[in-house]
Amino acid sequence: MTPIQDILIVGGGTAGWLTAAFLARQLGTAQGGVRITLVESSDIGIIGVGEGTFPSIRGTLSAIGIGEAEFLQACSATYKQGIRFDHWVRPPGTPGADHYFHPFSQPSQRPGAPELLPYWLGGEAGPTRAFAEAVTLQKAVADARHGPKRVGDGDYLGPLNYAYHFDAGRFATLLATHGQALGVRRVIATVDRVDLDEQGAIAAVHTREAGTLTAGLYIDCSGFRARLIGEALGSPFSSMRDVLFVDRALAMQVPYARPDAPIASYTIASAQESGWIWDIGLQERRGIGHVYSSRHCDDSDAERALRRYIGPAADDLSPRRLTLDIGYRETQWVKNCVAVGLAGGFLEPLESSGIGLIETAAYLIGQLFPFNGDTAPVARHFNAFMKERYARIVDFIKLHYGLTQRTDTAFWRDNADPASFTESLKEKLAMWRCRPPQRLDFITDVEMYLPASWQYVLYGMEFKTEPGAWMAPLNRGEEARREFATIAQLGAHALRDLPPHRTLIEQILARSDRRAA
Image 1 (cartoon, rainbow, N blue to C red):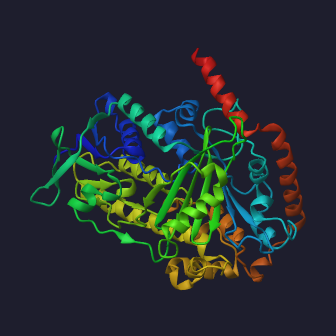
Image 2 (image 1 turned 90 degrees about the vertical axis):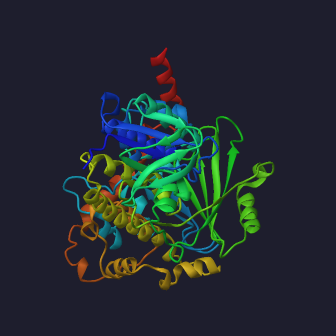
Image 3 (image 1 turned 120 degrees about the vertical axis):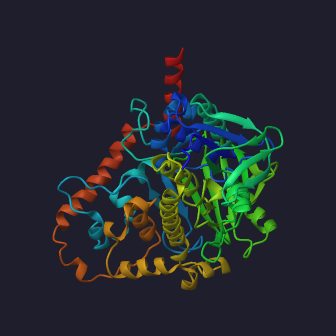
């Protein structure tokens, strides 16, 4: 075996540059370790559909050495404390709750207090108090548009769990600058041809402007086109469109009505007749887009729905149109090539899994790196891990759609049809009908979403776990009621302690400017 001394990443954007920066830090590129070259074309734009992240991004940014204030400043970033789902359970105007919340903070589990989910199901929190509201104070904070931390809290730290919204183009630029500072060599060139050797591995990548590029390991970050893993190596793509129906998106950038407008502290996901609309607040604008199924809605109807949601502010705006390939490659590492990002798969932006999967892939490559050149065992391990993670994300996303009570359009009726469920999701739901979900239902290492996230969505969608023998040991009802009351009181205290979202960002940026002066 020939030791791997060079990596060639094909494609930039978030996938390419996040992977490059992480690996450069992990493999000691600037200190004489594995050399990394990234080749990207100046003609290919960044997809950047959702502009949202999952809380794991905080650890990744810290690991590659980007400060929080630097990130907020460079990317027009804001804080994201979860997702509010409007009208997913039932259509607008129907009696019943019109939204539910998926917070990022875990349910309260103070020492000595009982686990709260069983007692919430038993009615100890009150007949109308939603699960997320009963077990965490985050909904109260986010509804009031307050931030998850205080200006004096350290980088990536705070009393509430959080992620970010950001400008995707600016994020890629920040990562490119930082990656090069970590020793990554950048080549601006267009890939024309990929050569394979006698064993079917990649031998060389030929570019129009920079000639022939070679490496010991190739990483495909070329987006949906998948120049290496798909076109050259022929790894098949498994479509998930029979489970997850949305395959189109229209996106607009909408300025605030005034510069000091309050900033939402969560993503708003508003269900539509044939999909859903995301609404996220950045520092200077809102990013709003309609994700929909082309089998249930034509492009003109989708655009009308988007404009109707935005109102007059959309009159002079033109949407960006995107086609989404929903699915993934079960084999994402073939011989000396591994796919990261859209080249490996995409499962729609509903729960911000896209960047989370980039983080996962980069982490695995760095931790399992085949320094001796023997990629086969590493590839098998990587492929098994990523296949399992994608499959579990598919189930989690389908959970949002499949439990709907909506019957007003074909899109929602088709989503609620059990024939569109995976067998693994059917098995989970069958278990949870007769007892609540718990940690042994999940394998932590391959889960992107912790058990609490499943619980927030499951019961936000008003799933019914039937009363039964599982309730027999619940003999701490008085303690649970006290804990529910304490959480409500702490929510009121948090609103006094945590600043408004926009104020928090302005304070952090001003503090950073003073330190730099």
